[in-house]
Amino acid sequence: LKRLVVKSNGRVIFLLTDEIDSIEAAGNYLSVRIGKESHLIRETLSQIEQKLDPGKFVRINRSVIINLDRIKEMHPLFSGDQEIILRSEKRFTMSRNYRDKLFAALNL
Image (cartoon, rainbow, N blue to C red):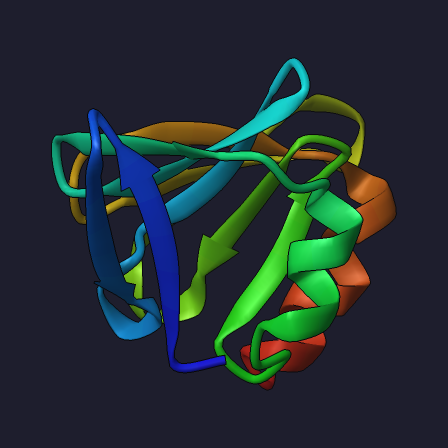
């Protein structure tokens, strides 16, 4: 998947996947974040995860997928969790259940 198509206010917006910072579950929608912008699409996190390049996008908890190229820092938390800070300064908590998948993608 190279781009996502988003319908918003009667317009069709094309989002390049390389520019996406994160994708978060938002009820029956997904919030696709690019910098400070946010766009809603109607799809499940599992569906979008299967379409995205696993070498660039990794699920870090039940409700968030991040772009690996957008990671700025990682800090350990309690019980094996990690705090991930993106270049946009958005912060997420990665649960320990998803840690191995992220570390494998980052070759750590």
